[in-house]
Amino acid sequence: MKFLLTFSILFFTTLFFGQKNKIEEPAMFFDKNLLSLNSMEYIDPNEIQSINVVKKDTTINGVLYRGQINITSKNPRKYDFISLEQIKSKFTKIKSNDAIYMVNRAFITDNIETFKLDRNYILKVEVTNSEEFYNLKESNTKFDIINILGKTKENLENKNTILLRGHEAIGVK
Image (tube, rainbow, N blue to C red; front, top):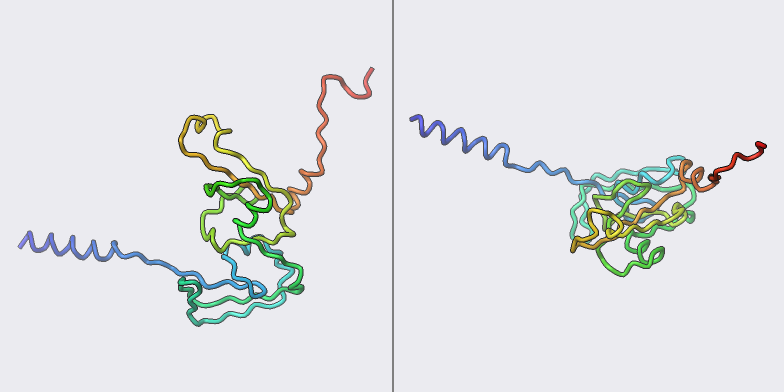
């Protein structure tokens, strides 16, 4: 009896905790362009004219999305979305496929295939090779880190800042 009770408790707890509760995201359309949810972080909310929510499941490129969110901007011709691969090919000289992407010093970990940025949002693209890191110099794994700096207030201020360095005091005799 003890064995049967122990076995049934283990069986039910395995079933209960072993299930994955996966939450699917809705398909996000911005001016009829499919974007990932984390791409919306880089769009100015003041530029949004309307939002329409469709509660019907949609399959796009073999991926099931739970509903749709259609966002229309005030000026649809203002946005020119490009993918991370297009940014890599147009703004860098990287030929390898191994790359880690960052936007404003934050890593992009989800939805890399559908992540897109507005071409007009890009201020600068910085590339760092893994060989530049002390701990990775002798590693066989080679990759590039692509940091895309956007036109945020902080980045624009840093770009326009001029640092003066020297050993002499200016204007002091």
